Length: 287
Ligand code: AMP
Image 1 (cartoon, rainbow, N blue to C red):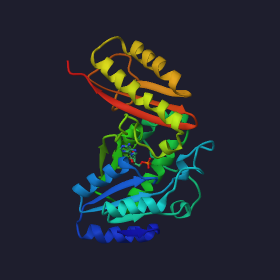
Image 2 (cartoon, rainbow, N blue to C red; image 1 turned 120 degrees about the vertical axis):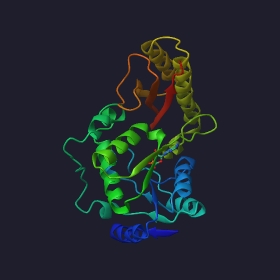
Image 3 (cartoon, rainbow, N blue to C red; image 1 turned 45 degrees about the vertical axis):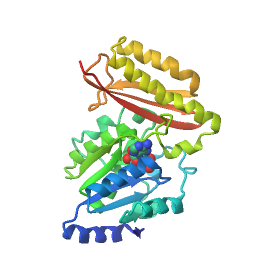
């Protein structure tokens, strides 16, 4: 496994790889790796000649009141996992190397469609967040030029925004959205779960339960979307400290739905203690 810190070196390295016409799978992360990340790594290993993982806690995607400073950075442990997974390259740049021009979110493309997908849901509660994500991923993709980009369905809106970005820029990268990996009790794995105290961890499991119940009720067509959404909110609220949103949306446009349709997605964000959790479930109606 080759550890690279310098973006220029990364670019040179991958130019060589591309000249040999090898396929490159790319898994961007913020580190504090868990099974969710490793499932993306394994799929990339399976489907590509070479796999590169980046670890970069991207300051541009954190708001001023968010957890940038306390975000976990267990780099030695992460490198151990990646070595064991036989990853070919790990890219761990500094903030200065990625943002030599200072902290900017410059990606404005005429007629781009991604900003529409970034507006609602998390975008509403984290202003500038997706601009930060798009900026760093565009910079990384430009350096790595992978054949495939691996992202998790756990961050569903992010996956949609990035798929649209790649299409807006005509980047020719295949975006592979991989299923959410969960703890035994259903909680979606996340680097932020380690913030949860024991009692908060117990409360947190209600989040996925409510979403699974909502999916089952929608499938059975038990009541209208509005009623089922209100029911789910009522069930969730006693267990969490704040619900930012709980929406049933179209999985492609992310527009909120008033009426049931064949394919839907239920997405939510809530706080348990000071920890912000997000999760979602896709719903397919077979009628
Ligand atoms: P992060 O380090 O949180 O920025 O995540 C890096 C990548 O891993 C993103 O594409 C995430 O969607 C993905 N990911 C994070 N958690 C999970 C999970 N529980 N299951 C699947 N993918 C995940």
